[in-house]
Image (cartoon, helix red, strand yellow):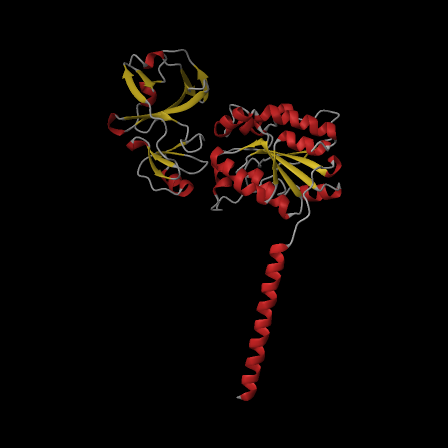
Length: 140
Length: 245
């Protein structure tokens, strides 16, 4: 928890904006319902903005990761429409997924981003989630 | 029956002679020499084809930038391409800009095609013509005095696809094409093979192209490109144009 407070974090409500350090990525109220999500950016190793997502899972679980596909660094999409997962990404899923529109890798966010299908060699960079009061923090 | 037997014998002799002729030709083919390759290029017969120097690849906020960034940096590809284009213009090489772009609703594409390229563009709502996302790399935009050709956006992989490029080149007496841009493993390669099939002498500029998958691209440059082109560094290409080889 202490480590995450020193991370540069940018909130994203539509258009990403860089925020100061110690900023929560979301209010708990923004993530009250299962499968609700908030996108934000973290500073990547090379200084660029890395797009990320935090998702509220059922049973008060959390998923947070980079949105950069580990296969060829495209930005993956958060897809909640399971018909779209089947038709557009040719994958069967029982819950919302992350999916890459470039080479069609699909990631199971209920299983730590495990690869369901496609050429990705492993899940996207996983992040840690911590809730403090009404704020949701995410760290590497 | 004797008639049948006679025909059969004649056929056997004919087949044997045929096989002998083929074998003889094969031996001769092994021994046939080839003319030397060109060591110089006439600028007036040469075009430099620049493929997809657009926002998604050249801008840090572009959708494809992360995939090509390392190789761009390693090769200093953008700066070196600007330098190359300047020299090519000075030498009288025809510089041709080829871009990618789609209509706002992608109706020109077939979303049921099992190939993933256009399906991915639709999913991402990417590369829409006229949007900032398809903007051209500013340092390469032709100036008022430049004689470059800027073709309309295309939807195909090859620079020749749907752009009329082949007819345009032939009408100007272009014999040689040099290919640069994005990406080594997709559109550059399609342009190189397409150009070869159309009869052009193709020069692949390895310093001025980068790939989605650098290792794969390096293998293609080494093993596959030489089948359809002569692979050159920028300096080698300029030297051929200048007659300094």
